[in-house]
Image (tube, rainbow, N blue to C red; front, side):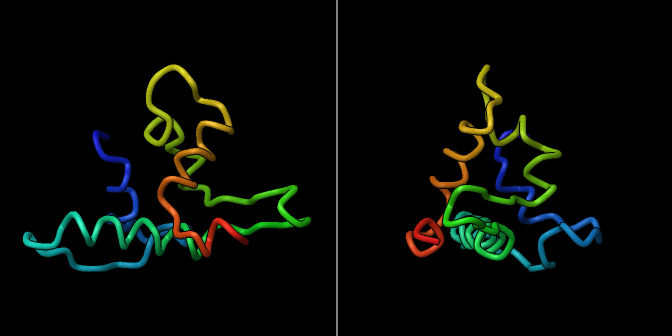
Length: 92
């Protein structure tokens, strides 16, 4: 996958998939950002005052798409998540 945000635009019907939504050619880039932020906002659970973070299975299944290059670590995945979430989500 060249753009991992596509995972938040496609729906296979599984519980862990993002909700269905339509995308328009003129706003596709903005809509992909919105879909990504919305999915992460709804599916990330912070526990134990930030000591533990639960993420969607989708992020685990397609980790390689979210962590391009050699570093497939949890911290590399976390960096991608932080870069694509709102400040309010990051403060949780």
